[in-house]
Length: 210
Image 1 (tube, rainbow, N blue to C red):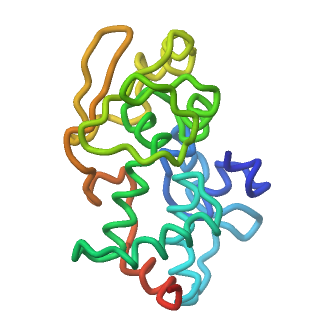
Image 2 (image 1 turned 90 degrees about the vertical axis):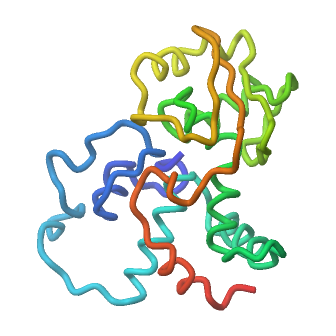
Image 3 (image 1 turned 90 degrees about the horizontal axis):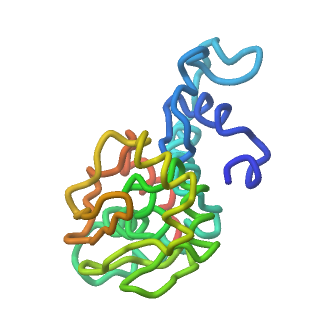
């Protein structure tokens, strides 16, 4: 959870970054004060190149609910990929395939912390088996569902009635009424990410990581 991890509220995080991150939950962080936190938040400041790259990296950290060490681990693994794609694209696809993100993108949870909690509490199943690790990577063909307790979860019910995101990516197929099931029918694409970010700046930020 953003506040528990950083000591800063999700609204201040989004105001500091200058955009809303769906993974942090409720919309409207920039409605009243569309500028950075603090008494000088509405004043223009010259931002260094490093700070610009840092902000792009932070978008990924906060949206996906990761710690710096976790993200670096994904960076290293992606740089070692042998599939011929840019490592940044490989990493984004992997982050989008994390189980907690899949639950969030299916609109079964209002935020990334809420989806992680559902997973940790054993309310999520992949191919009929309970998986309690948020970092579990869902593969094409995997079917996602919830336990009876999961379908009764108020976060799930509320999210189905009032989705946080306007649509579900085309890489997922959803079936069912109240008790929905989902299937990953293709790998998520970098353009499926529900917020603006500059991948090249993230690449530049981590260029020394091997």
